[in-house]
Length: 166
Image 1: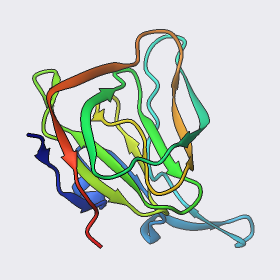
Image 2 (image 1 turned 90 degrees about the vertical axis):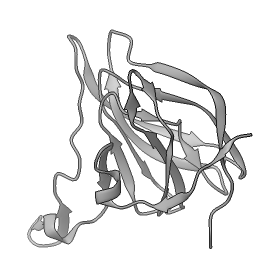
Image 3 (image 1 turned 180 degrees about the horizontal axis):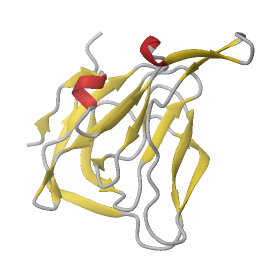
Image 4 (image 1 turned 90 degrees about the horizontal axis):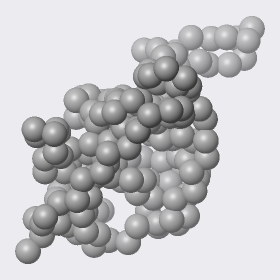
């Protein structure tokens, strides 16, 4: 029987062990362009490790995941960070896990608002993109280049994300 995973709100402090929450933070705001633009500065840090590596920007179009949903696998990128930011202001799920001796532990599930992005640190266990309700586009900043930057793990017993409490 799959273990049920609670869904918690995405906050900077709760997500800190896994990376950065990217959202407008008044503490980082500065005016630029003659005072016509608010810049929310350095909300995350891209990592691209290894010779010939580069940081790239892509669009991902995620198909919606229907709940209940079975979490059967996780992945990580040992050579770089991976950042996701929704473009249509739709809520989405972020699923991460602590590393336990080279394997992901019990997943944690966060409900991200449509104005919140995240940046997974390199080597952070996470589930692939989890759009909700509608097909959704995400701006993605990650690493490209030589070397194996993908590791996947399949759980022997899946976990279940049952529903979002409204």
